[in-house]
Amino acid sequence: MAEETSGTPVPLTPAEVFDEDFDKRRLAREKRDERKVWYFLAYFLFGIHLVAFVMIYAVRHGK
Image (tube, rainbow, N blue to C red; front, side):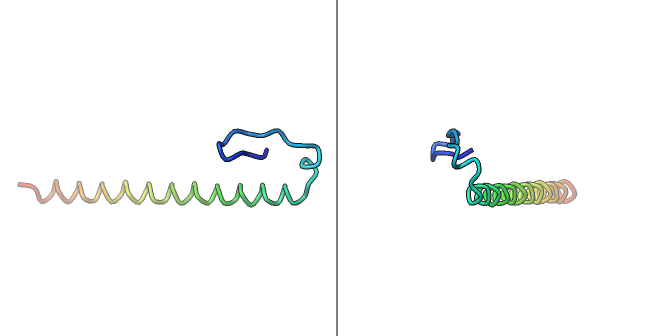
């Protein structure tokens, strides 16, 4: 489905349903969005490990 800038879905016209360019754009957007999700997950997991290492260091070196 096409989307406006507000993020609400807009119904497709019959011409868009069979439009190959529209399908290619949709697949490209899907791929880009999926890549963003993987980047977010990677940064999130890296951050969790970084915090864990800092906490381990603080516990071992605390007095």
